[in-house]
Length: 105
Image: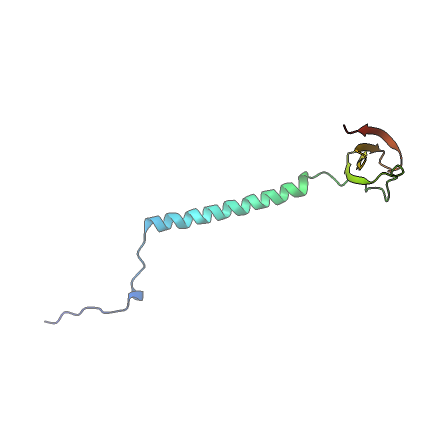
């Protein structure tokens, strides 16, 4: 009596199922889905929550004679210019009218 033994290659056998690898696979899928959902939420919030653009800055801001601007910032209805003489000039939105002068001590 002859016994036959199947001698196929290893690819004929199903891969072994490791529960740890299955868990890791689903964990990676869940984390990828979470990352994509978070990215979509961030893009949505950036697109909807930023305020509407304000009116454009004036073409020129008239500084007092001899003053040089070091920094400029803008509020809702004012423009502030810090000069090299350590003074803050608060302008109206037109950039011509000085509303207030503040000396930096």
